[in-house]
Image (tube, rainbow, N blue to C red):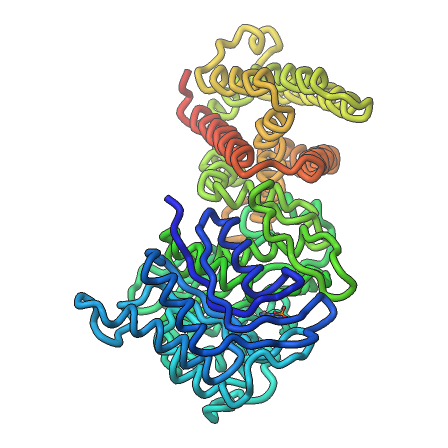
Length: 582
Ligand SMILES: Cc1ncc(COP(=O)(O)O)c(N)n1
């Protein structure tokens, strides 16, 4: 299925914004792009040199030609330039979509999802919509729009035309929320207010989420990727490419100041009580020409593919973010984004100072539930409280001893698949580390009355064999990256568990106690410097691999499956520990 999507916008001769950005974005999403040109611009990355508008009659004709022949699944509008063209667009669309006998005349439900990007002024400061046309755009186009997507400057301009607050500067998340709510009164079904020009930090996002939740009588849920079950209100916060829950291990490796990371935040309001906040790290780049066009085109394409509005906006913000992050320098001014990144590589954000582990963050985010089930397993909690039955711990230790043999052998395969002395060396070093870890194991076991002979004689449990054999299989399948990811779930998970337990111990209500805990040494080992250093090295290797050879979307999906499987097998290993299953 290749849904047809229509853009009604201006042409950008430099190819970064307008019609050209839209068509590339549609293509990148697997949609068939059609276009109605409202104006030609003589434009490049340094500015707009001239504009030559299409006549309103010709705009209407183009729309009729397209919609009478092709079944359009979503529409986006961009630069409309003047009052006559705004009217022409509204009339032609109404004429087609509201004249059919089945359509409720004039009602928005007659239209395909319609995204209105109220383009008013170019980034370079050139007028793209006559100031006296703003009123017509509001009265004619907003009521037929599923979503409008102004930036803060456009929002100020639009609101000032209706004497609504804040008519001047929108420079904080609080003023963005007020503006977005006021924009909701202008007739569109939903509003996405883009905060690219607003400076925000993590604490600002938390404060906004808290105030939204308390405003809605605490029935909202500000957890990442969760929504409240109540249909009365919904508050969601998406933090993309930023460390979230159960990512102690990534934050520890980061070593910077997360609180000072500059974020870009967009606010989506669908209904009075349905608000979604999208936050991501700001990329310091001059390749931002056409960002607004690209975002609205991506939302339209995602909706044409059947996504809900929230999902469409979420993936469009990620698509656009990666487009900025992977852009090549083109032209002498504000260059275009890389619209086609999704065709060649998966949507993995670039490494930045605020997140040096974007690939790993994405892997964890993609299978967050399994990861949480693994690192916050009952076995781990009981171990932290010191209530874990000794027989379970000993059983686990014996099986872990068996497992580590597979683990070391898998690293030997990794060494064989490595082509530089550095990578051969680091795989070999891990084998040496594992052998040293075995000594710790033996010492532990001795402490619990288990001799080395008994360890060797232990029968392997099914969970151990399944996990170990799978690791070796991943090694034999060919892709070095796949093997690295297969090994990562273990390396990272134990580091996370060590740090998580240490953190829990600071919260008396968690019940985790380190003083007098008979498993303290285990916790100390995995939260200790040596193990954490090994984790850091592992993270560096996997991130370097992903950055040096960015995966295609399908290869990335394969990798996600490997990660998910590894995490599941780890979780089953704890299950086995608790249930003493052989
Ligand atoms: C044809 C056309 N449409 C839209 C924009 C806005 O894009 P930007 O805000 O990046 O200048 C533009 N410059 N040209």
